[in-house]
Length: 248
Length: 248
Picture 1: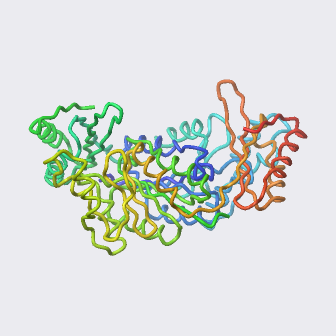
Picture 2: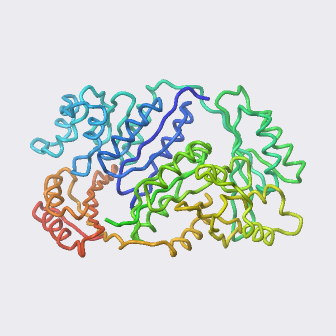
Picture 3: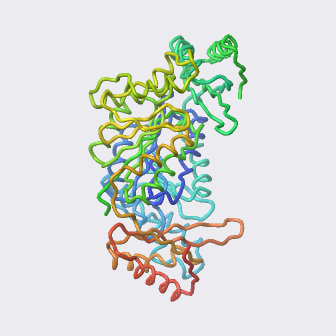
């Protein structure tokens, strides 16, 4: 088990209405795994102050890192910064470094009141720099606050993740087989019981037109030195059941 | 405000590891909105019994409908049915109708122990039929339990949603403008303050190569008869600020 855990809070009515497909959490999930940080939970919530406060407080206590996306722009529906300030009982104030960055970024006379709003954050926050559109995110306690626009979020996230304390990356191997899941279920369970430090996931797929299908079996472990014995047992079991397997 | 609310629980380590991008909640979100059911929250959790129990109990109390996806297949990592049984303190038993459906579906002699497992669910459940691969989902109390494979989930969800009690659909109009978000933020806030029964969302986008961008402004309401006055005010405001607008 990695000793570093994380949760993601996706903030935005546009995700809950189905208007926007969230891809930010999948991007973060992949990168966290590679960095040895165990993503435990993702929640998608609406633009509502009390909901944001509740989730931030709960996750901040439970996990090593909390990442939020969305709600830090200049408009009335951007309430992430003030909500997180309230969550930690901190004043929401203009961050002078952020103010300076934004003031430099906009043409003279265009750094208006709405844009200035983007420099407000909980007192004592550290900035997360935004090399694309200037408006920074911030870190307060173990909460990392990022924008919702994927292209911008991704660049900022990849930069910030370099600085985090991490664990050993998870080892993962995926085995594909043409056998149906239910044919091998009992054998897989036995192998899972034998190697308790590994986790064996079974993901069936179907091609409903060609009427074919199979399973991707994902073997992973946070703390084994090698998962080769588990993989070997599974490949062997597939063979004994008359199936084909390949490492994907 | 629609009087019917919903939450989605996405169950699966494969989503949290980033291996699979969840698209099920987006599909459900769009359809719930059209049906007048307000999606309040989505959570993605791991294949862990206590986590499933906690979330199901919490959401089942809070919302009109709870939908779960994932974890109802034949393998050892499919623990949704037993977890939901435990959540409601109900026995997890073979549902005879489900057993019969599965027994008919598989070739003689192939309805093995693992496959039989798919007919187990909380006692007193109603089946949610699966026209594609037979294995049914189920409804217990206000919780609707669906598979994770998108093609199968979608067909089952569209069928079951027909039978739910629903509210008036949300009215939604999206206005696109070439103006930047921060230019119109203050005016949008004034319009939002004027029409408190509507919700105005502001979603900027950037084309970082062409260095252009703009905003999609989404006006919506659960209970206004018409949102045309809000839309007119916004279109007018954009014009006064020298921008272009179109309804998208």
